[in-house]
Length: 330
Image (cartoon, rainbow, N blue to C red):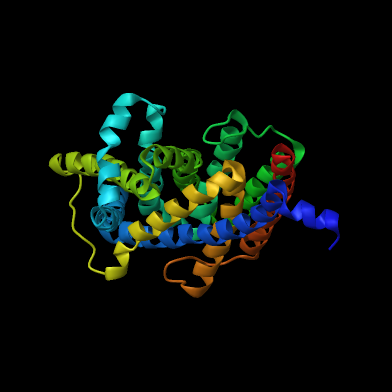
């Protein structure tokens, strides 16, 4: 390596250029957690016969895990106790404290539709909404330090991700009722694209990602729980806990996914995060459908093709962002 190359590799910009591909790979792997969660919550919804009840179980299991972690440390207990004062001080926009509602919508849609649509179909409808949301959030500087303008590579990457969605969903669109069901995860994706930014803002305010995640689960659980209680009182639903142990893993899987995405968004931006996680979600969906057919659905060739198109889209969008970050640092 020449002196010039060595000097470039040591510069902050060089480190950024190297870090972006590594963060991209980490996000792909983290994205695989989402279809696993969808499969679990979908089966819970199928057993309980209600998406709302399924979401309460998922958020409840995740909240129990986070409560144990938070209460075990004096520092996190103190950071968590500071939340009411920070909300009153309005040091960050109030909607950042409601990021848990985005997760609540995603988990509710999983319980209501995943077992019917299939894991791949559900995930790709969710992805389409997330990509559009990420593109807009990056453009208007929501949750990121530097605005990312619309340009050909970024738009092309987003379009390829949406094309991947169409390819994967196509075999399942056999009836109008299926299209209606797909709308729910799509709307959830529009909200979920912003969720990592909200969680990151709360983490910065409290000084702890663990506290941010716990708050995320509390908000989601309270919203979903209140709706379920009202429905039970009105006689609209009967609730019982699942009898199979793995049906309580939806919350912990979602917890891990939220933590990883909130960390990775700082280095990638919301659009790249959405595109890289798209690849992971599609690959994970295909693997679930292939390896655990009882939880997934039939795998078509267009499903595999859709995953490959998503990978290409993520790669195209990654290159210009790495160059842009390097230019800014210099």
